[in-house]
Structures are given as structure tokens and as C-alpha cells.
Image (cartoon, rainbow, N blue to C red; front, side):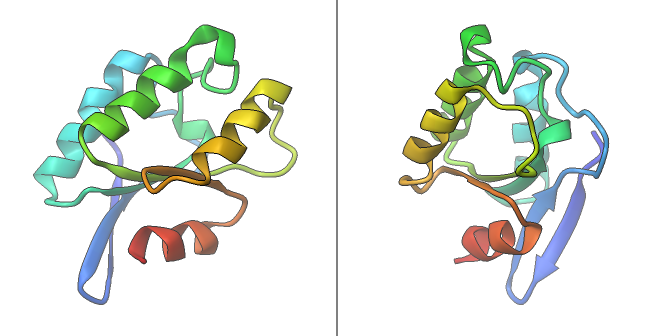
Length: 119
């Protein structure tokens, strides 16, 4: 799996590549979790294009499956999506809810996501 290990001061996190899909199915989330374990980090930054095609359509349940795995395995995950990314109203509502927690948050800029991950 093509993830970049980013080191900042005393911490490191994995970052998904620009413009590449990493997950074509929610079942592949375990590969991401294994990569975190292999690199001894519980921090990951992903981009919208790294996720499954149905992630932004909550009726597919893909977002729920993926977020549940992050929670179960205590992986702190940041998602960077552009403001023009097509999202449903329900996804926007879910975003507001998840951004209150400490496991998964959504950002528009990589710098914001990195700051939250490393805080």
C-alpha cells in the first residue's frame, strides 16, 4: 500500500498519496491499519481520493464501516477534502458530528489536518 511516513519532531504519521485510491472496498481498511502497526504509529492522514467510491454516500454504509475500524483500533485519522468535493447533506451532518470527537476529523487543508493529528 502506497503510504508516506511523515516525521515531525518526535512524532510520525502515515499520509495517503495525492490523486490515488487506496481503498476500493471497506474491507481493505485492515491493510491501512496494518501499515499503521508496521510503522508504529496510530496517526493517519488521508485524502478524499484515497477512500472508497461510496465513502461520501452514507447510504452505502462504507463510511460507517471505515470509521468504526478507526475507533476500534484507536487510530486517529484526519481526512482532507476540498470544499468542492461532492457530498450529501447527510455526509455534511456526519462531518459536524465527527469533528467534535478525537478519533476522526475532516479538514480542507493538509496543514490543519497535520496540526490536529500531532496535537
